[in-house]
Image (cartoon, rainbow, N blue to C red; front, side):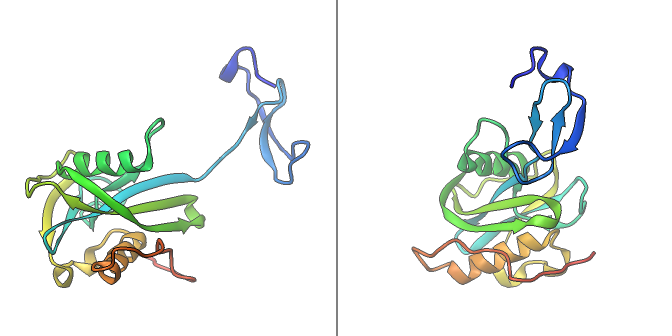
Length: 181
């Protein structure tokens, strides 16, 4: 059922819609079901030679910590387009996607990370508006104690493990993880 006024009439109650088995937000006026779904985060472990592109976050959460260029997928863009866009926005670097490196499910915050392996098209880069700094580092020089999120640690380690492989199944989050900062 579609509401004539679309989003203007919705007054939601929690209930299990007919034919469903989960409690949802349902409009009491028109029956519209507001499905709440996980957010998709896309990014890339991008390299120039043997060095990995990292950016230092200029925004919360984890302002001042290092990460790979990554962020929320926008409407009407593919996961590859999102990873390319995020790398441009955060590091002003142009990349070519190689393959999916990993798909990491972080259910406690309702996020799915899709991280690619990519190559920089040139050595040109500099911090974008959401970054304080950007740099190329070797794997052994990654500032591990200052990495922003566990998913980025997983992606960097998975990248190192698959660096010389042409084909591998996408990596995933560890069976059990806990990281408190």
